[in-house]
Length: 136
Image (cartoon, rainbow, N blue to C red; front, side):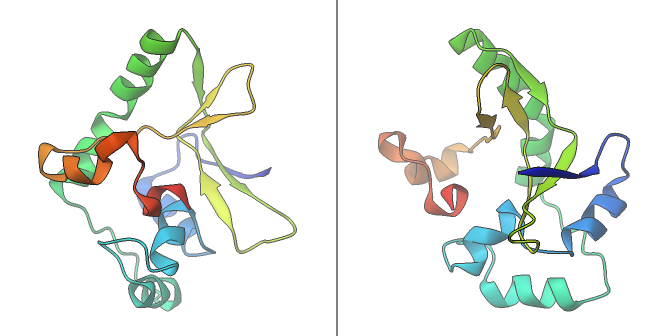
């Protein structure tokens, strides 16, 4: 994984524009047909369009707003420190693939994705199983 572009201080619209340059983590599950909210065709149409789609909903906003809280709770629960990534990462072997990592676990080769789920979606997280579209 290589650092490609710093996101520190980057405006949301520019970050959304950068996402059009390849397949990111949020796109991967959709491209594989595993995301119940976004289809492979929707990802394709978004990538080829010049329009910057800033689709947002309450669940997405709450997820962003609670990211810091989730990271803090992870540290409290595990005793492990985390740090912000502030970077778009890529792979020179597969230049179309990139990632935006929420946090890195200090002293480990591990990332932390700070996810939340509403009570309405709790059935998708049963038995401590992570939904497939997040794993891929």
